Image (cartoon, rainbow, N blue to C red):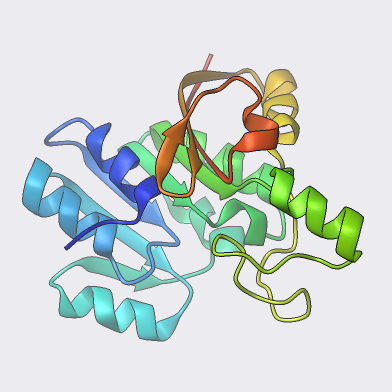
Length: 196
């Protein structure tokens, strides 16, 4: 099975044999790849019951839960990595979720669509409407995205929090792009974080 581009980057950068919590794990595709290819002890938290059933059907340890309220029950430093892929922008309290990620995991991967990508800007400028793209496939009224975060917003968000960026990857389509002008040119961002 081929992983989505951001998940493939995360999978390549998780140390073999690690303990991982994938928050918003969807159908468990990343967890299955980590288990099968890297010998990772992967656990998952997913809000959608259908996705939970699909992940459990793959033999994965996934429970139904909400990142906004259910992370508090996990002990400090109980995982090597906490992963939040394409979920930050859907959280009601992304600041609290990020704090929880870095409390639960020694490191955290966070990926999100970049709402400052040039196509998004152009759609707003010329069409005056919220864009529908491959990365943002839902209409404004039907999207789970409640926080329209940009790469520059996220970097500014991290600064006062005492968070160190250990790695950052930027995607245009499914291909990596440079960090230079990433806020304009990247459709998607992946960050590897740890507490300073």
